[in-house]
Image (cartoon, rainbow, N blue to C red; front, side):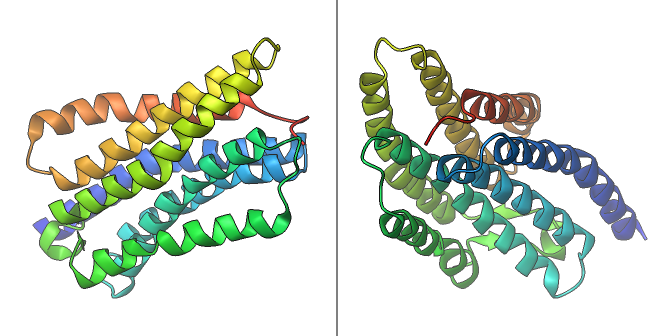
Length: 240
């Protein structure tokens, strides 16, 4: 009875904390696509769509607790979360090459490559027990330190480093034009978003540190919303 009560309490907490981000991620995606239907806005909206999908699947996973589908839902959710952030780099790449018009073949190849590389989530998460998510953890996701190291390595090598290079190019390309302010806002927002991703992974790994958990709960949710809002606010139509 106590276990069932704790599970019910967790379902309520997760619902309250995750439904709101699902709503605003979906709203930002809708507004971007409504504002302009081109490859750039479709790419940026994909960040919000996959983030919303990740949160939705994570929510479903806790509702399906004590079933064989809970773990599967959660690991797909985390894959969606990691894959979502590749669209930041792809979007920046598109903007840097606006004049050259990157071919659709290269564009879809970039998405495919990121989609394949992101499958490390399944290989490490399942086969090397990088993610534990069951009754033994109280249906709270617990990451291994190996999984944290691989996640942080992936984010640094394949997301942060390319984005730094692209950010420098963006600033140089738009030097002296009115759009530069939006570029700077976008760059600050995406690096804030990457920092939040790193903290989320650490939160799911360093679960026994009560002080960090309190700091996380006060810092990450509001800054996550700010990052999403300013990424959305930075760009709209007229990108392609």
